[in-house]
Amino acid sequence: MIKSLKFSICIFVFGILLISCRNNHVTTSKSEAKKTGYYQEQYRPQYHFSPEAHWMNDPNGLVYLDGEYHLFYQYYPDSSVWGPMHWGHAISTDLIHWRHLPIALYPDSLGYIFSGSAVVDASNTTGFGTDQIPPMVAIFTYHNSILEKSGSNVFENQGIAYSLDKGRTWTKYSGNPVLKNPGIRDFRDPKMFWHAATKKWELIMAVKERIHIYSSSDLKKWTFESEFGAGIGAHGGVWECPDFFPVKVDGTNTEKWVMLVSINPGGPNGGSATQYFTGDFDGHKFVPDNTNIRWVDWGRDDYAGVTWSGIPGSDGRRIFIGWMSNWEYATMVPTTIWRNAMTIPREISLIGDKGNYVLISKPASELIKLRNQSDTLNIKTQSFIGEKEISTVGMSLMQIEMLFDFKLSDSGVDSVGIILENSLNERFIIGYSTVQKQFYTDRRAAGNSRFSKEFAGISTAPYSAGHALKFHLFVDASSVELFADDGRLVMTTLVFPSQKYNSLKMFSKGGATILNKAVFYDLQKVWN
Image (tube, rainbow, N blue to C red; front, top):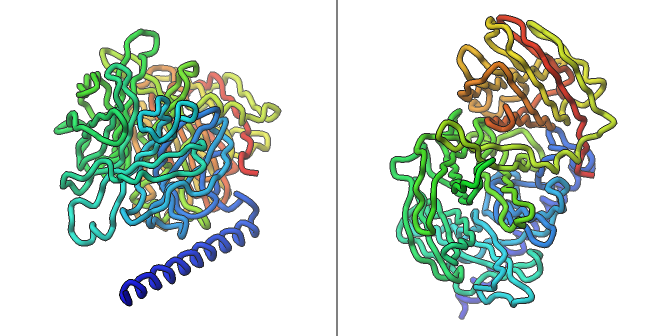
């Protein structure tokens, strides 16, 4: 009895300290924001999603319901460095303007709340709701740090929770965990979806360097179906945060399944990255039609990206968002009260190309709403060689969308691209090398990189361009996203210039390049 009383007192005191700690962090955050203005801190994204304060990583539980896009995410509310994971929560009606909601899921006696997914159980297969109020159901990985430190292999298990008020409040299932660890250290990141052909729920999970597939009739009891990944794809690190969905190949009636698998380390330019596979799925087994290593994004700063479930068939899009950072330096980037952001939302599709199916990523069409139409600049055809500065008529180069259409008419051209520069001679370079047949980004002199020896460097992406070359760029306070040739290749890159870039240049080395046209859009801020 005395021991029990002492334990209760300890838990109570710990709870008070935790609340006090959180309150102190909130006060600090508000104090810092008051000095600089809401979402006005140095490097704070102006049209990307970032938390008001503290640490954020993987997007989780992406689900659409009744006009609202839900974005849950890995969140630590007590520090701007990774800690015991919660699920943060925000909603949007347009994928651009977000409203922060209270934390959705907190750690409990079973562990931290790691990554997972969410669906609307429209037929109430779980029995958590009713025919009139179908439940929103989340599945997530419980990560038990105490078991992990003890040397156990079964510290990751899968639990579920449900909401009957459109994600505002959540109840954890009393029968958790619903999918117990069979004795494997890396057993996490469940993504579930309804498979109409077999009339079952399907689930894929990252298990060490493989994918495991399960099925269920009620989201509570799961049956192992198959395994995928042995000797296929990139294996430079552990597999994480998978996604799996069908996509129609553009211009055809052919449907292919796309599997996204994030990997850390082992990315094409170091650290974190996401690969993809295409193939066929019968509800039991995935058969790939291409076993080569292929990357969703060749940049260093797009990881753990997944797609929204529940988007109506009348819309028909597959919409993706990723965590805009890299585990090599994510905990050290030079932000203040918050740390890390998401990529812009992207529309994913497939095209046929010489017998293969290629993933295409394009900026979500909603982003057009951000354009200040009164602040649009069009540049007409001109030939240039060397570096040529472009006047953007007072537009902010740290909050801009740019489209370049180049023609490589001179066979002597060895590289072409653009440069963002400031008065300190810090410059970020995005280019295409005709000699090496690759896109590249160079942030060696782009700004602050002292926080990590892994940050500065050149990133490359193999690509065979024709005579025409398109750059579509979104620049925000600390990021540049390149969509090349209508989304056939993507590179996402963080930058931390000491001063804002205020000069834009084109360059053509080795010969003359023709600029067919360039269009610039000043973009609105979404955090007011």
